[in-house]
Length: 130
Image (cartoon, rainbow, N blue to C red; front, side, top):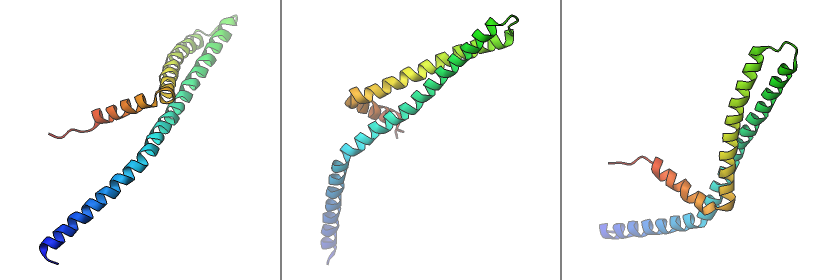
């Protein structure tokens, strides 16, 4: 083969490879999008669990506060520490719970909106060359 024949063969092989890659991407795109949504739901559920754990911890702290308050001679350090830890845990737990519950609901109720926001965030965080 001469130089033109090799160039034509190279271009033909490249175009065939691009077509097959395009077909592969188009075939796999729905499954990939579904897996992105499923992963986000699973990740949000893990953080939701941590929020519930913080809420349970806050209830435990408030119970210690009540128990100490009911004593004849309550320990002010235990009372103060338990109420502060209870309030902090309640705030953190509520924040974790609500934000992750909203993420889960968005994935179930409006998956297209979730995907648009997901890809918009990817575009914002991608490094831009000059």
